[in-house]
Image (spheres, rainbow, N blue to C red):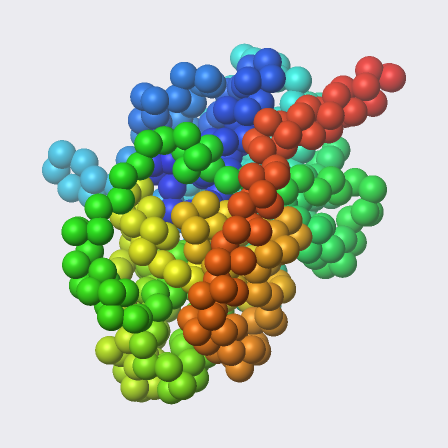
Length: 406
């Protein structure tokens, strides 16, 4: 298994999905060596071997470039030492990762190499070309998604294209992602399997206590008739947050008792803060900064409505997390999670009026709010990671049967 991050050293949903999938596969009897690009510190993972491709320290907050394809050649990673520090680019980390995989494969012979996203595709292609090991390319997002409608990074496009062409099988996290792979990279549809993600099992199993006393301000607002609307994620063009803020302004104009919580961080943060001021709604908007763990759960628990405003979202695990905490969901039609959840409001990411009207409808109708909350519970629990692991096993076995014909 080739991946770029695992919790707690993750900056988004990629690491969460990789961890849950690996754990479910291990439960089905699969032995896994999972290679990460940093010095592994995963004492709580006992179901697989986590291997380090370098001595790079994991960056707890932003990860090491899992979502920054536009900065592939920029020197953004700081490596401290006893006397000084040096900087490396994502590209340099990738090369170290590839060299580690090459050395590993001279000693060990796995049955399958399962590579997650563009950052590890080159290492996967090396395994296929040089060692004739079957390759699965697992696409959690394409460069077309990350670019949010723009052209994206041409080098990343080429890496994705080669990985997808060389792969024996491709796993896409949604039908929307499958369509992009087919239309943009001209990959045959029969080569692409859709395997949706599921809710992080920790959100279901772990005991969690929410203390409203820790959030006196929002508690006071809710007690005085305010509706809390939240979004969680990276502040990038892909997430459509400027459209969200414009919709928020339209909703606040009609109903001032709305509070919007933007949880996350990213290159658009300052732009979003400035925009909220220009729209005259800064008193109704809270920017929390990057959150994880209990802080993240608290935001879901405090919210009445969760909005996913993404221009292109291959799946969207945060929607499942929010649903588990009782939030009403408003999702763009451009999100893959809309393929498995039906009890939500859906809109096109550019339709700011429709988003504003949906927020107002839920805020002013307790009956509608309760109906949507009750209906979605059976939907987000309908797919389990064990089901997903079994689908992956079927793909593994299909490749193995094909390999044994020759």
